[in-house]
Length: 155
Ligand SMILES: CC(C)(COP(=O)(O)OP(=O)(O)OC[C@H]1O[C@@H](n2cnc3c(N)ncnc32)[C@H](O)[C@@H]1OP(=O)(O)O)[C@@H](O)C(=O)NCCC(=O)NCCS
Image 1 (tube, rainbow, N blue to C red):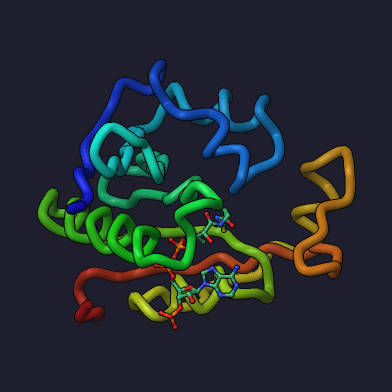
Image 2 (cartoon, rainbow, N blue to C red):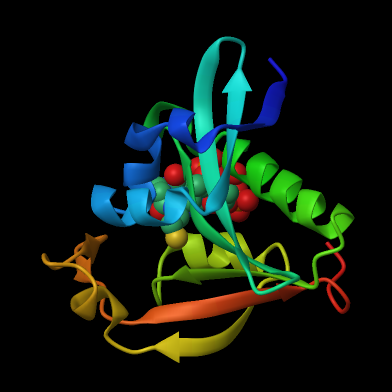
């Protein structure tokens, strides 16, 4: 079934999906109101979602992207990410940023699509979350900031 990707009002954002990417509902709610939310549906089923926030005049940040666990590793995440990249390219954006952990498949996921590491936010996950966060049994400490610059990246 082809994937339908569309913007939805942030009040209809699928929180259970967004929590897969960010364990803090408070944090998600705090950035959701100043963001756009896009959902990916297969038939009547919402299988993925992402949230993007405007940063400055022509820079945007991918705050969150997630695919329902039952549908992961089937290409939906890639399709959603590519769609969002093209959406902002067509809107005239200069760049799209994202923050992620320093290891794991998510890092490859972004770099495969042209994102490059631009900085490290040391201890981000310790300073910004009340509980330690683990990925593949390893505690997340630092956040890598990645940027896709439209002028120099070909996707
Ligand atoms: C990151 C995420 C959105 C990717 O979505 P997806 O639909 O599974 O991605 P795709 O099926 O398009 O796969 C993309 C690549 O990632 C790999 N991948 C996806 N999940 C993986 C996993 N758990 N372990 C290892 N590799 C994985 C796929 O094998 C694929 O690699 P390939 O192109 O070499 O075959 C999804 O794993 C997810 O929702 N994770 C939880 C939330 C999250 O971590 N969000 C990102 C926060 S920074």
